[in-house]
Length: 135
Image (tube, rainbow, N blue to C red; front, side):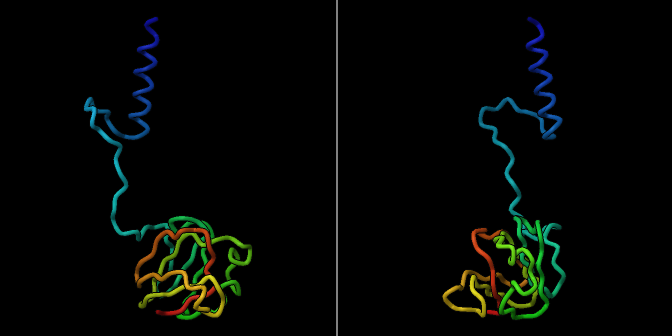
C-alpha cells in the first residue's frame, strides 16, 4: 500500500503546477484574491471617443460601439440587443459621463445607470440598454 502516499504526492504536485503556488503548512493560509486595480483590461476593446456595450462580462461577447454622444435606439445598429440579449458590461471611452436607459428615446422611467468618462465594468446583467446620452 505504498502507492497511496505516492498518488497523494503526485496530486499535490499537479495542483502546485496548475496554480503556480507552493502550499504552506499554515492553517490560516487563504487563496489569493483578485487584484483591485482599475478595470481597464485588454478585454474592454473600445475605441477612444466611443461608448461600448458588451453581451458578456468583462468586455467579452459581442460588442456594439458608438461615437455619437446620443443614441435614441441602440437596437438600430446593435445585433445582440435586437436578439434580446442583455448587456453585461460597458466601457465609456468618451470625455463625459454617459447615462443609459432600458427604454428608447431616453425615457426617464427607464433610467438604469451611468458610467463616468474613461471607466467601465460589469453591470448587473439582467437588462438591455436601449438608449443613452451624456449626463
